[in-house]
Length: 477
Image 1 (cartoon, rainbow, N blue to C red):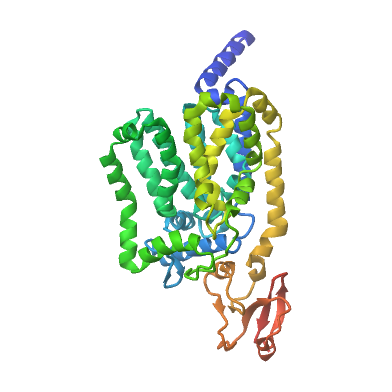
Image 2 (image 1 turned 60 degrees about the vertical axis):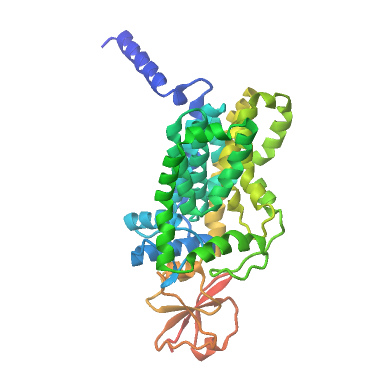
């Protein structure tokens, strides 16, 4: 083959590739953006199995998923053996348990579905960004580089599944407005995902994000006309309602606790004492604003400056701004008066925030960001290294319980969720009377440097010392 012919074929193949994959070969060096996004997501994927489940949230949900795999009870998540978990619907547990059933129970398996949910949100941003007048890969990079989003992509909890469901529902609603009625079923599927991830709160977030835009456009009737309300309702109820009914039948009292306790009392009463699975942690009302600042960082700092700079041209983009703005603000506004919140509550508002930033950035902003693309993956790698090496073991009992012999484990000051998970549910609490009926050797986990008569009565010796708790071997003498 002549050199000229070879060169001609190479050029032809390159041209075909550019036409098939414009997002990779397109103008503006889009390949750099995609590579940076893949690095961010890839670094997070690789990290999933390198550190233990940490107390309390992640270890709690990890243990609930482990029990589901062990007991094969796929209907009702269990807080402990025989104790139903009414605090949240089952989707996050189904996700982790299904993965663990296939891959084996491990940190990687339990976290993988939540990472995949995060990837799904990023893909949705890419696919719908152009319809919303924003840059697909730039918006996706903004989202993937947000501290709160990339951290949450891979944490065993409810919020990434909720964010995925709300994103599907909101983007489907935009497509319905554009006359694509079939996307009404996507709205129903998205809301069903949210209902099974966290309950009715997804409907509140959805309406808070959607209605201001529809009212501003005076288009509620037009949108409902495009929706196919009957088909939407059938799909939504068919996907979500059966589990709620079946769980109330299996464990009566679920709906009362879940609807009233988890959706009203928890947020309105700072000292709510009705939590069956822990203690409420009252915070100053308005703390959600602080949570939003660092969960959306660094773009939470950039957005106000861009809005101010582009203030004279915002009218030209009012349709997109009125759609994305309320959606992004809904979690913050909703939880502003709440007394018991977690930072992850702002997560459903991060995808529209990324689309908003990606649409408001001018060419100079894009060029500056592109020159510093690799800062985000480098920072993520450093942060994960610090967490894995210096933080994770202090917030989990995995290392404390590693390589122990097959003795029963007791907790003097209450079992931790990580202790329950890393003993496969075999850890027990010491009774209020301080008496352990164990006849042979056993392990005791207690606060470091604690003084308790059981340590001397049962000849306990320090097996492994930790900063917060120590592992004692007792009854060998």
